[in-house]
Image (cartoon, rainbow, N blue to C red; front, side, top):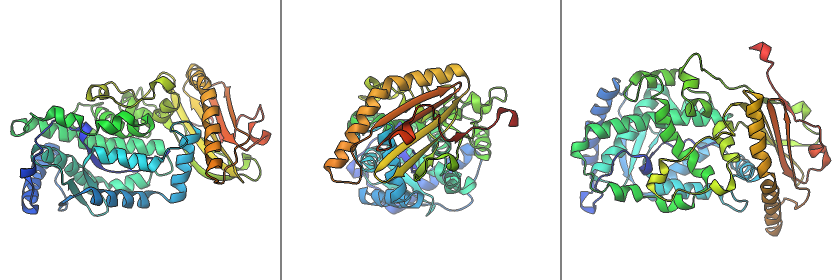
Length: 436
């Protein structure tokens, strides 16, 4: 499931609290003056100059929603979004009756303090933030502006559209860069910030996080938290060399972000296996609606026990959020395909693991969830039937198989034996280890 590459300053990931007062209203002139000062700080701290000017403006909720819509339209189509939502529901990652896009927009709207728009090379501060918090947000978005001018962020996102895992890894690099330098700027300027409202700031957006699905908030928050940690992997948080090297050769997977040694350490380097779906192996009459890669982050979400699939109750719990698990570690590579034939829908996931032991652990974790997956897909088909939509409430199936270090999962409805017959291990092609 492919993330949309928004470029936000999230309040929950800010380094310090600051005053938010109605009498601190920023004029455009004052905003540009503050931005110019922080821009000089960013250039000095990064040791890199902005090649071009950066525009800045104050916006509101309506302006934010316009930005979100424009980013969605630029990066995906309605058909792709529908396929990604269906994929998440078949995998049991979100409730079958949830409005995926609506819930995501509501969540990020509660968290965002500002955003950068690569299409205009400008950034926008939400009108509700002034004082010290506005400066922290400006610092974060100025880093995005600098990175965009130096490294072409939208070009990086576009190049990874067909691999959701690589796209999230790049998103983590981008947000990690913004968060790391924002935090350095905040510490350096702590004396000028009012930290008396830190607890109030920490509570902002918590109501939405309490009710949020892990599938929504973990990739979102993880890009900031684990992205910053990833950039500490070679020379430390204050090193600008890590940022330069990472943008020159971005991480290839969530595994490399979650385990920085698998990127930075030549002896531990672990690049993903390129699993492919062979269209000639697909059953006759089936068409491909979507195809992508999940990676360690999303497979950890897939195998997360149901009792742990909760929101975040308070700011302290954010520090304890786990972005991977025993079942997802040792990931080597994967690819899934979403298929359609009439009213039938099937998702097939093929994965390979570093060791057979890792495959066994992943297989065991999914096996425990098979009854839940069957109930979830059954509920989804009944819900669709009640709404008189196209899907038929029949033929629910879940098939899980393992062959050495490879694991195959097939989930769907209306398919029959042609898809779920035992002994059919799947339609994926794995590289020959002897080829490289």
